[in-house]
Length: 238
Image (cartoon, rainbow, N blue to C red; front, side):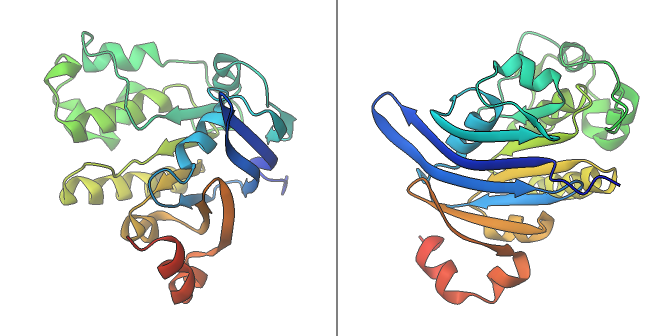
């Protein structure tokens, strides 16, 4: 059995123009593991995910996905290798129906990843099943978030990156989102998510990293974090 990490990020440095955003950032995600990147607004969470998937290419450092280097590759190639990405802005095709949005994300099955079909996704997201022919522009924010995740899963990824999946959602939808992530883990998918919502992170995550001003300041299990009042107060309190 392969016990190497699904994702191994080491010494990552990223910039926006001349602004240095990520500083020697390192993290790992194991196979079948849910890892959360916690931090306040502007800490560098979204930039970390964008650097991994190639949307904010790192200036230095390494990113290995399933043992293969991917840093510097274009995003479409990284996604085709089996890395899914759900941005905070969702970016669904509002003029297309739910079913058509899913077809846009379709990729062939992979031997080392769960296989998804529209039917299996509709079983997992019953709300989407009821609106297959509805234009995405006529969906609520929570429904659009579910559609974005489902569309990414149509690519049959081995690892999915979720940027602030609970942001702006009603509490009942947040609970549904947590159940969805737990189901993805149960099916063998690895997950890296960025979050500010510590309650949500506790519901789904095995391990956590805390990022502040582009640097990893803390790492450990969720149980470790629950027992570290100083870290929560210093890096996560508003």
